[in-house]
Length: 373
Image (cartoon, rainbow, N blue to C red; front, side):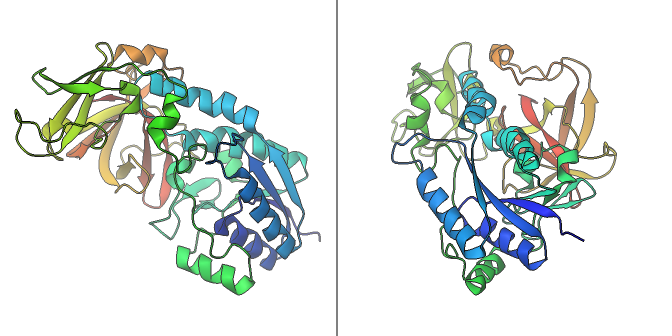
């Protein structure tokens, strides 16, 4: 009987390399594919080096490597939305959208056309019967970024690293003689890389300076444009050493889109930075709809601590954000929404972020935060 053909996404990093190696060891037929999503040659894009490392891994494992280019799909389905959300005052996470629209969308379809029976990636996650499960390595778990991948796609997906911790992955890479065993992990948003985020965003959004105010409306300084800041942000405000305020760091507490004003407060745990609940888009649940009465936790950022929550479906229209800018965001929910109630205040929940929900080891899905309170 012929073994299933698995197409493995080879990014050029150690995680995807070990994924391919483990699948070969398990007896699968394996081929690799390397995906290019961003092609700006500006000194920060590592696409050429990534492809070279992916080819080195494929050569070492003696498997074919297919090169696929989805820069057009990425710009149309992910980047355009990313810029629109920032312009409207939100703080989006493009990696979630990239996984749904490109990696497990256009690229997944392409792999099936190449004859794949199964798809595999180097994500730290696990699947069972179309459900998305946490990885064993809690620090590396990437289910947050996979929360919007359709369950039917997970039926044909393998995550070979789901039962490993990162040090074990490095050790296996060295043992297998993989040429990328010591390669540094990539960080940040894929198309931004290590470059200063605000400088990158300014290439696509015009600066709209406006006042930085305290809670009483006193003007403390000037910002470059509210799109360049996020709630809870400390750095980049240039408000240190004021004679009319006590010592202490300033944090962004609110973005007043209508007035183009940034409202700041002092103190990491200032009450203006805390919320007891929020409303988000109604998630497309991964697998069967969960029992919302069962104990549930929510995570509002990758690697953030899960916190208990109570969920309740709200009537149509409840997901519209409290700012006028919500109408300009194509991804804003127009039907039912999910109300999330927190037993303890949570700091710096930000409209535009993904709220991802869990029941035990199962990742239920996630929705975009639209309204606080």
